[in-house]
Image (cartoon, rainbow, N blue to C red):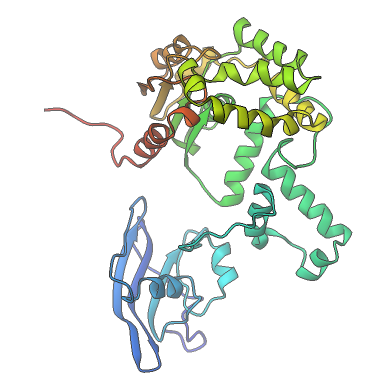
Length: 373
């Protein structure tokens, strides 16, 4: 190491281009106990790497050394961060390592039950806030302004975020996805979407082909045709009465069999949604969301989708019927078509295991194509 940098934190290292993490001769002692002894391994881009061992073997200690919660006695932790260069993390501050793009999760994920989902997420985004803890504790104007911007960036016009007052189109959603990927330092991602989310995912893959590695479209359509457009109008017309809105918008998204077999759950869901649908701010946001798809049409651009694409239908989907997905599968070059039987539009509720398996399987498959010989 250089004499003016004993930890090697500022030194860059030569490594093959596909290496993202390399551990060299890592050791750490706790008093007379050697928890990790001369450990070395390398992880390349795209690899799924497991660290296996019995309780007390030192697995968690290794993770703590990598992220510098613990400072090793010997060895190097070489990481290719957002800068693109390999550098030694030993001796660096934990929050600085997070900014380089390396974070860890814990075995027990504790959420604060009294907070909303977005508030729990914002706690985890503390590293991105510019104002200090003092300003946040006293709710000074700059802290309030920054938190409001975070909420708007996290969930446009939805949940407990500040509401928009004017209509919008899909373009602002596409800009938000692009800004989020830039913020996270992700050059290429896999995108999965269902219903409205599939429209945004499909448009993003067309406009930004280099940023989408694989695309998964559930209950998708290439355009808002007269059928779907009139259904949206019916939702909007029922918006003044929460019960009318519920019966217009909710039962139709499930298959009849699921609705019959889970009628008790549907009744409980109705009681829960009565408060939500009775909230005028929420209903106005839903009207804006519905209207944002009124001019959606990418039928002439489907052949511009260049990534492997999974297209999934449900035979009892009455909002976006199967022929809509078959239309996509026939025109997207590298498409793969699948069907979730015994399901309506809300396939993530009706068949959650299969829904999840399709996403994880298509995302994590090492190969995008196979040759049969």
